[in-house]
Length: 203
Ligand SMILES: [Zn+2]
Ligand SMILES: [Zn+2]
Ligand SMILES: [Zn+2]
Image (cartoon, rainbow, N blue to C red; front, side, top):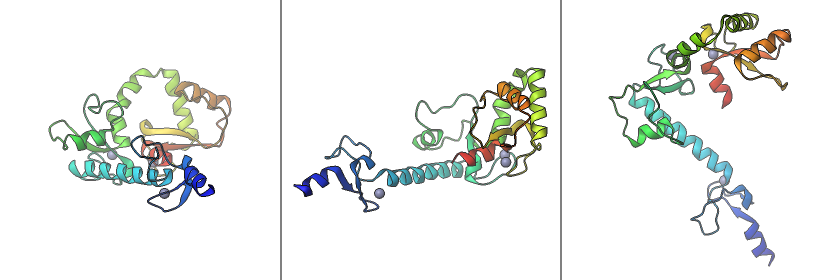
């Protein structure tokens, strides 16, 4: 009886061989017991490896893991650039889409670092959008926080973001955030990161 009860409430992961509560296994409709064979930890490891794999394959297909504009290397800095709207619909990532379409070579795909991609896509529109007051607030904040990425030294103001390491309720939208910083005397728990380095922090 206790044997039976235990097998219902726990299960051995077929990868790491640890016995864990069934709640540690994601649901899987087609499996007999309704659960994945791998525990959530192993599943996350597999997913990360899979993502890194298709990302690397896409970079290889488009000239290797190096930014086509500035020459920056390292997969964690890089992404795939394409003109216009993303061809990958819904939950599909661009990497999955490229793999399924066998890496087409006539649609303008290329490898760029996040900083260079931002300069191509979002930066021109943002520059037009901001008011003079907003630009002034932002300029002042960047200056107070040193004017360059604390991680890699990038000093192109267009790709710098203010990163927050504390836990106060700071406004997230640009204009409100810069005004908040000014009103609060530019507190120390903020730092500048470029878009490449913000990406690394998130992982
Ligand atoms: Zn496991
Ligand atoms: Zn670049
Ligand atoms: Zn940086």
